Amino acid sequence: MIIEDRYDLGRLVTFIPNKRLPIHNWFYFKEGFSRDLAMMMFDKFGVGEGDWVLDPFCGVGTTLLSARERGLNSVGVDVSPLFAFISQAKLQDYDPEELKSASRDIFSRGFARPDLKGVDPLVRRAFSKYALEDIVFFRALIEGIGEPRVRGFFTLALMNAAAKSSYAIKDGAVLRFRKRPVPPFRKFFRRIVKAMIRQLGEIDLKGSQAMVKVGDARRLDFLEDECFDAIITSPPYLNKIEYTAVYSIEYSLFLGSTRMNPLRSYIGLDVRDVEGILPGHDLPEIAKAYFHDMGVALGEMHRVLRGGGKVAIVVAGGVFKDRVIESDLLLAELAEDIGFEVDEMWGVNRRVATSGRAKIGEARESILIMRK
Image (cartoon, rainbow, N blue to C red; front, side, top):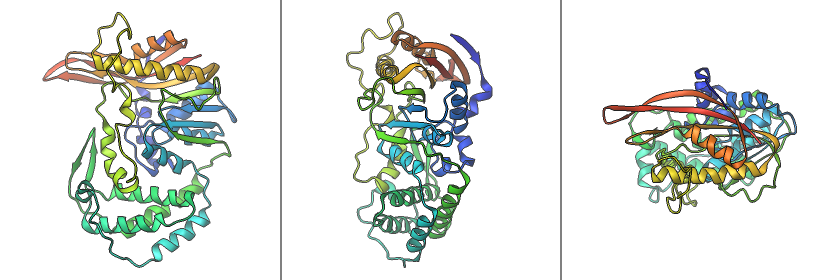
């Protein structure tokens, strides 16, 4: 395995470059990586139109949307119904005229003050009373749209507008609240809808297939053996605090009938029966559980990948009170035990890890590149 520092790529493993890109920017997902990274890997792996790409931790669908731009077929899996919904909404083929007609209908309706009695207290805290009344009013109108594709588009637009009008700030694994001036919601929402419709003409999506499924990366039973040419993904990081709670406002407002369990960070939650994982390494129990689950997920990736298929995985070191665990090297070891050939490891970011005031090491963020 060739180990190389590629700090020039550090920005690409963040979502920041997507903020300027049509459709990719329909929902800001701080934990995601960029379209630029996906495109770079398509080029490196030599996948072309008609090939199949998998992202078993797909988040908000960056790999899948990038694949549609290249004419690649794709499948994405995420345990979060919220993220699966966002991915699906971004991947649809829309008729701009149909959306404009629906928009005219929605914004022509006179305001009727909704009943907020059943609204979650956390949601009440996140918005001004007037913004929240507007959000609930428009949500009811959108729920009445008969065409699921159009309803999904406007739901995502409302979700986007709500996030930008909220007092809530996603800060790591917690929500913080800061009151600030916000524009009149109706005008702001309308501007976002117009921008999203306009962006449909700014991106060329090929007629390739894209499927999103709510599911578990450790159990890809619905996929046949050896059906993918490439895998590009980023699993939850070792001992990353469960960050999906910061999306509880979106869940409550837009997926109220869906229970929110621990989502992407289900990897490594169960610490039972994990002995024998990576023998020879002294690991905390939570790390053993993490690598156990990642070993199962890697086994599924190996099963569904064609011979000669390529994989890119973005990973990061785990920080504990007394040490930093080099997750990239241990995942490479697991992958080789499963049958992958790990060709390269690119270190793309480093951050100082401390315990109290003492430095205990550096946590490295890396891209593992392997093949079957």
